[in-house]
Image 1 (cartoon, rainbow over the protein chains, first blue to last red):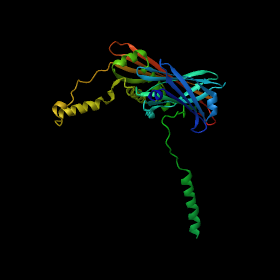
Image 2: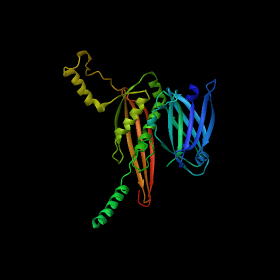
Image 3: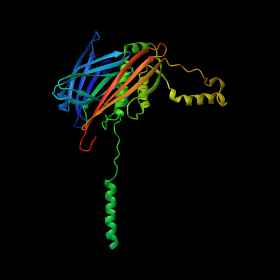
Length: 137
Length: 199
């Protein structure tokens, strides 16, 4: 369970329709040889954002004892999308780590392009993460 | 009766005006993106701190150096080359806090030296502190590295648009060897487009 939790990736996309949005959950599990396999779950409360920006890939590694996460986002539309994202980190017990210090960051995704966002855990206790994604207000 | 005719409308005017003209105060999210103006803002500070600390923590030589021990650092003042009055100490405070939270570094804090000296002097001279437990001068650790930073800005504007480019550069210098061990920069571009009533 701890291993599963430590590699849990949740992408929560909320947009201009209030605080609810599209929630994409990707579960990454380590195989016997250490390889990562993913399964994703999408709960769309904001179908527009879910249609316009796809989760093309999720990656996670450890650097100097700190978890480093990368999520690749793929635009499916011609126009530039102005979104914002925020990382949320969890320890192996599921508690949020540094919940008050994770700020929203602006991100421009150009039409039909792929971009990647990366985050580094604030300290070694953070093992799992979520990426929240929403349209800029 | 005549007084009543004057009093009642006055009361209504006062009650309406006090109700409508009040200032609404509410709490905001300190982590939310602030797009009030192109001036340097809280979101810019948070982005700079997060980006540069992430970069330093994952830079291979720094990873190697911090894997065995926690080096002692000191933070220099930021050279503010922008045209704005910015509390640059607030930026380095955020960077230092994030680095400390990572558990990879230790810091010397020069800003509280005066209080430290007063306290040590008090412990030694007041006669109130047990001799063996009083702190002594000359026992502090010397920093091994210094964090320096430059903050610059380029502004461009025409009749409709104001474009501001910020660049925050940070360096980690080894004080023993003089070698720059790490350096990175965070760029931010903010664009304001004129609306009916200006920027």
